[in-house]
Image (tube, rainbow, N blue to C red; front, side):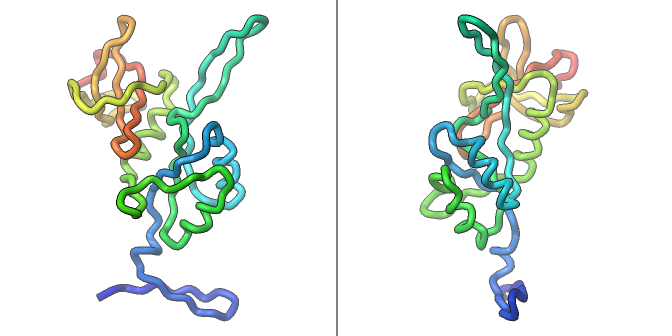
Amino acid sequence: MIQMVSEQSSGVSVQWPIETAISQWHVVYTSANHEKRVSQQLQERSVQHFLPLYESVRSWKDRRVKLQLPLFPGYVFVRLSSWERPKVLQVPGIARLVGFNGQPAVLADEEIEALRTYTMTPLGAEPHPYLRVGRRVRIQRGTLAGIEGILVRRKNTLRVVLSVELIMRSVSVEVDANDLE
């Protein structure tokens, strides 16, 4: 039996299956270098979204500049229900929803929360080449406690890499060896 959700709007009653009313995390693919503009447009449309950024220092001839760059170039994470999809696809700069066989793929809430935690840490999250295999570890202490990833060594420091399978991208963050299991 299909459960239905009803909504009254302007005197008109609309019903749809409950599965379409549940909001889930999806990934939208954007035009090149339009991630921040898309994020702003989604904010104006009151659509819940997440654009992870990292800080990068660039040196030019006369100065050094700190830039906020997308952690996953070309992608913005969006929480929406299926009836909101057309509204989101009308946003300038959005090319399409990432998916398979014509169906948008869904990201787990835990994956988004792990990404949010990664980007909020003062340890400096950075883009990393995509990793699928390696020595898996769990962080025991600190702001990243409970997060699992792949351990890598870089310039005499340890970093944990979290991979987003759906878009085949990874992000790394510096950790202390004593905090790992």
